[in-house]
Length: 125
Image 1: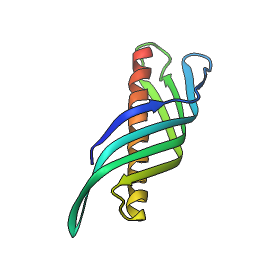
Image 2: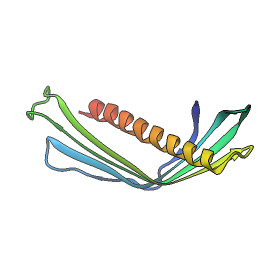
Image 3: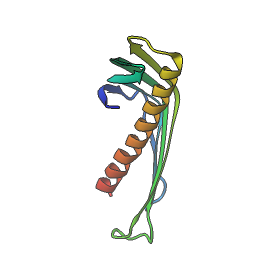
Image 4: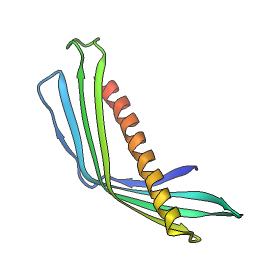
């Protein structure tokens, strides 16, 4: 399934830093809107559009250099969580499809957020 991100909005951003070389970053209650296309095959092929709104996105990052030096390998932890996913399909399909698509979108977004956060931390350090 291909998902295209049309717009994003971070509604709150909170950061805190511990003593170097350890730092942490956290987002609280971020919101993300997605739009994409779907294709469903069950007896017939159905295609359409979907809109998903993910609310209450919590992303907690912790990173430090193992060994403390600038050239030491990075130890990185990422813990994403999404409180709610609302999905609208046009044309409508079964509620189970909405739920499955919502879970897929949530998992994909969480994975993508951690990958991007890891790259950003590596660039900052």
